[in-house]
Image (tube, rainbow, N blue to C red; front, side, top):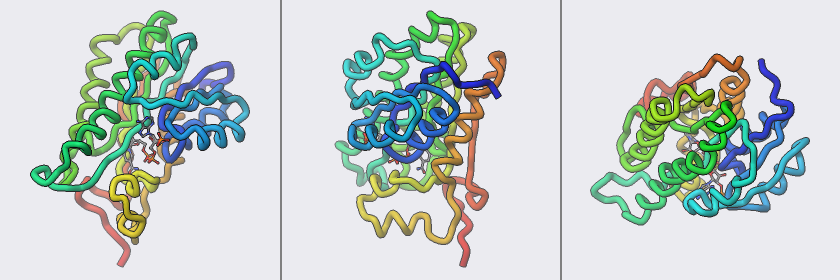
Length: 246
Ligand SMILES: NC(=O)c1ccc[n+]([C@@H]2O[C@H](COP(=O)([O-])OP(=O)(O)OC[C@H]3O[C@@H](n4cnc5c(N)ncnc54)[C@H](OP(=O)(O)O)[C@@H]3O)[C@@H](O)[C@H]2O)c1
């Protein structure tokens, strides 16, 4: 395992769930962590518990804000984790406002992060760009439609980068989990009871399980690029099949 001491890691979506767990994991291994999301109070709380961290509050949908936040920064690791889903409506019943928020955050937000960080990584000739994709970027499911489209899009961006910006010392990774118990489902459904039901009688991944995969990818020797990590809960066979305890 390569040391993270002296490295700077920028994590978006660091105010909750997988992003917060990833920031914690990287910080505990010695990285200086730049924490981004919209909820500044949560970022400040996390920064206070890490050995070395700074808060860069921002909205990933705002390209100028994202660019300005890291304009003078030298980055070693970038984890584009900010993301969400809105609703589980069938496509014909969907709300275009929800579609816009989902695509703006998950796909354009990732592009804004790439645009802000990648030129510096290429210039210095090293670095890690890690995407939080999803198994929803590999298999669709009923009601997944636009969220799945956003995550298929993230996978396309990951694959495109390997071609457009490969061979320049930068490593590209997509970490694609199945069901992870975070606030993700509450944000999607807006109803705590309905959200709790999604994880009922099954053993989902934790945010820390996913953070562990990110940590593994960014601590390999320099010549090793872990490209794609797909993590499922053991009881989840596909985006449609979950075995629950009776
Ligand atoms: N949970 C799962 O089952 C699962 C499975 C596969 C993939 N994923 C992916 O993992 C990533 C993290 O999700 P999670 O499960 O950790 O959900 P979460 O606990 O709800 O965290 C989502 C994070 O994204 C941030 N965010 C959302 N919109 C943003 C915006 N416009 N600008 C900046 N930050 C924004 C939120 O911060 P603020 O609200 O403070 O801005 C929060 O920190 C997402 O990309 C999601 O698609 C999740």
